[in-house]
Length: 447
Ligand code: SF4
Image (tube, protein in one colour):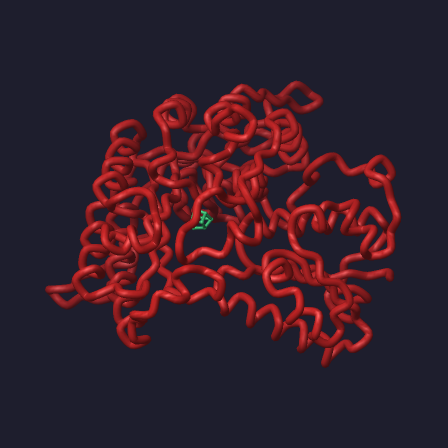
């Protein structure tokens, strides 16, 4: 086999896992190519039935168009439904998670007998191909048992990667040019429990990491926590975030799932809405205008209109800068799949739409609150992502030469065209502009 194509479905942890496999195969001399590849590696997701359907559809299509391509399916769907995947045309290998996905085992399955030393890959990855921001998986698995979630069954219990290994990987990624490192996993708030440590210990190590280029210039970078449970954002984490806003982005993605206590119980979540909102208040009391985002599921079995209105109200009180709203999708093998009491699809659609309307108003209110703040923007062309997870536009005429990888700016809010200007529902598209502060240094940080 000479060429390989990778396709990834699902979460940041899966995207990270793909990069690990990519580096292993490219080091064995394979070249990455999209068309007519010898090998297709599909890293799958099984969180929703739709994710599984899309992966199967892709495999069938590739086989139809390129019957010579051999297919290796890995990831959560491969762990959960290996028999179904083995029956698909062109599929030669079905490798789940865990041991099967370790680079040496993965290569062995594909016919490359190689020792870890020969492979020459440090634990983890050396770059995050094609991106300014790099994902770094700090742990895998989950010890909870939410009634809608299949993940603990396919990824096992929480396993943390050691802090020195992660520190070395952050250094490698920063030296490779990544200026933002997103700490991801399946349940990152549990990082360290199996090592006798806690997440703030890792954050402290990353705050203490001082990197310099060969010429002695500081290599600046920031880390961002990906999804973390609201009840697991402890005071030490907040102290580190408050004390080092340039090193740890003031953004927290706090899965809410439902804003109704009855539904949270049915979901087997471990908090109620008062505890969730108290966590949001605690974070706001400690950080300057933090960006709080959330996942919410609508149409969970038994969700009534009254439950939904409670979710709407909790979301209002939480004041999210962004909401990811998912319709409930029954996953075979989870308790929720056999609960009955399904919500009618048209009701799910209606609730999703009403919550989305609130979500866009809430995003707009948050964006307006950022007038005058200073932000470091990770640039992609002449716009980029701020620490508070906002897209910021920078006027090209304000930058000399090509855009730097990151830029310190002062934010101003601009109202664009009216989206809906009826008196009852006045809403505008809000654009955030950034005016550069100081001159970017070689790595893009302010002078
Ligand atoms: S906390 Fe719940 S939703 Fe999140 S991975 Fe664990 S079981 Fe799934």
